Length: 433
Image (cartoon, rainbow, N blue to C red):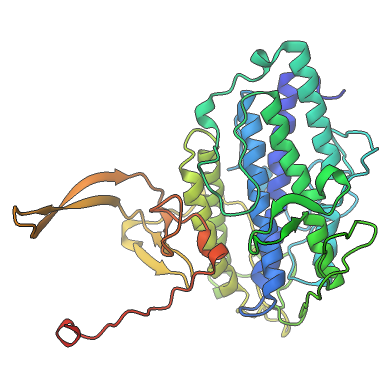
């Protein structure tokens, strides 16, 4: 019973935010290292897990907000120096920033390893993430009984990220207002990682990219990559995957040097410039997420969209040689303090069209809605501004047409396989009439 007070419970839920975030940079490095057009199945696996870790981050923030806490993300404590232990774990293994490989998949399986369901809850120095959440669930139930739910759940409901904020992956966002919804949110986190009842390979959702088939939990998705075979109906954790072959080409990967650091490269060098740009962008995303979880939920879609711009920056890095003759550079995920953070200026305004993705808008470009002013006979005469839309210095606009958070990108383009190639007839108007 180490979590004895509301203050301690809030602290542990902040730890859960740090734990969920701690998995994101390693997963993104492996995903970005896969060469374009190769290992489609593997990329789908890692991307789906990443999206669900974003969901877990959101659910942890919802529970913390529900008990009167304030999620912190724009902080150096969210950005460890890799390789790093999972925050507050028993430090049994380290997690590196590395390319997609058998070794990285093995590490991901260690991260997502199901807990022994007979094991005791552990609020600190946990062996598995599931044990950590068991300790939080136990404390939620006990403190609700001791203090009463109305005393425990005092958070502002307007700070909740609700189900209307579609995030693009499998599973569901749970609005947390009481003990039942808090436990449901944490159960979603654990089952997506470990499987149903800690005993089945399935997590109760449908596959993000193939909704016709049930989805396996994170640990077992990575096990499929390691085994080169999918799970099928009737399979169990004991049987392992016995379904169709899952082909992995371990060679079709950028040979990124593991655990890159910006200090490895001189200021002004091409690698250092690209690395710094990436770190400024990612630190800005942490700021957006913190704002989203602390009263500005609409910014969640903005942060999600900006994340898709990271891929282009990371792959630019992975095209640059390190100088050792064999490896390439890569993203270092280093924290940039707000006072040092590079802000886009009006002189740097630009719009980048990501292949198969959104419009990335840089430089604090105003975003407004307008409507047409028409004459009595229906001729369009002019534009009238109707709304100024709140944005950050960088934001992403939907290009696939299917975002549920228009005008902002929410990541739907990945799930539906949007292709952004121009197909319209661009001949002169006179020739087309």
